Amino acid sequence: MFYGEFDHTLDKKGRLILPSKIRETAKANYIEKFYVTRGLDKCLFLFSEEEWKTQEAKFKSLSFTKKEARRFNRLFFSGAVEVTPDGQGRILLPKYLKDYAGIKRDVIITGVSNRIEIWDRHSWEKFYDENKDSFEETAEKLIDL
Image (tube, rainbow, N blue to C red; front, side, top):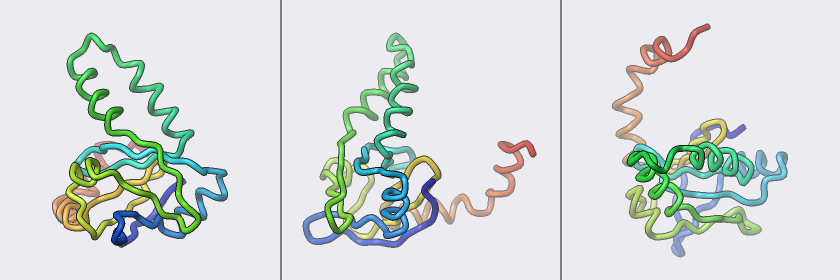
């Protein structure tokens, strides 16, 4: 549902303007509310409300008797916050989430199908540079056509 890579900056109040393509997709799919939380690889995950509920059900089904499940759920859910874009498509990212992802001002927003990722620009560039050459090899390992 969400696709693309967008270069953006936070405004002086720490708000992020969602790219117009993402706002258009949200509007077309009647998405008014999102949830943002700690993601993997030091980025932030932004989920639509519907997708958040899907992910929440999966993670809630993990056994709380397993240490890794408790650790993951604590970090994932304690970092979560509901955000509703304002009339100009801006959302406010809490300081603790910006700190987690190393976000100061410049960000890359990526659409990753069922979620949106928000990266510090430098972190994204490093991730991309380190992984772009193994894209085909990874595809061969993961995808059976």
